[in-house]
Image: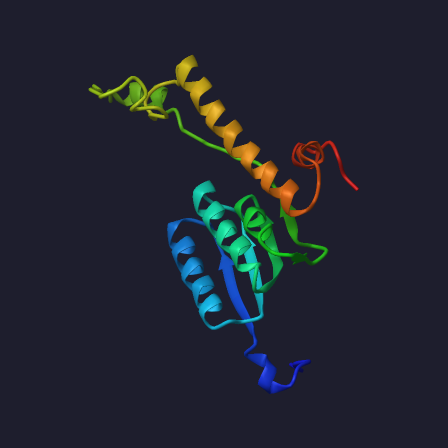
Length: 190
């Protein structure tokens, strides 16, 4: 491969790769790498992202660290095969994003999923007795249906996280939030 810069400049660009699901281990590794980029005073960072997403908090922490690093480092995100949800969130921490035409990019949204195995457990004769410290301590329990109050709480949680995501994308790309919401729910395609 031909490198377009003289060898003495090759070490001037840092590269961090984020692949797979974004969770605590990814966050820890990436934050440590970003600290090293800062300490070694790299002028530029290539952030390679190939991820279907992950947890909201971990993605937000990486994004925040990238935004701080932008003060001294030029950051370019390169999306691989897929950059969705948390991968997009992290990418917003870069001044520039490049993708391939075939890169699957998107999913500005938040999901919380639970499983209800109540009927299966009844068929095999398994039941649970629950003693809890509060009415919502076993929210998303797999052995029963959600109550209406629990659905409301979880929907509000998702709505807040989604609002944060939309606000981040809008701010990072100088768009209004309604435009971002349109992209997120499929109303706008260019």
